Length: 122
Ligand code: SF4
Image (cartoon, rainbow, N blue to C red; front, side, top):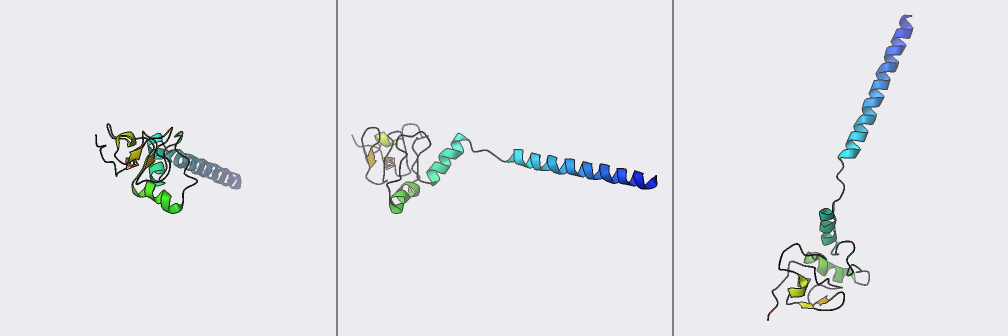
């Protein structure tokens, strides 16, 4: 009888411990932050590429050195700074749908931006 009680206690204890472990794992999994659009944009910037859906996103033809010009200047396919975008930058040459830049290599979105932006001279 005593052995049965002890076994039942052990069983209940192990069951409780198992539930707590599963709950902990589930809780930790839910705490992982999922990337939001802003984070994806930042990641795109870090990689020197524009955000998903950008018609000027294909940089597969660039050399690593050319890709670095995008990373080094923090180029993004969509500017978040009002009044500053590639289309009104002095280094931009227009094209459809993508233009080019005399500094940053590869297809340049007219709505993009990088840290080297210079106001277009009129
Ligand atoms: S230098 Fe100007 S045109 Fe070139 S990527 Fe930067 S903002 Fe765009």
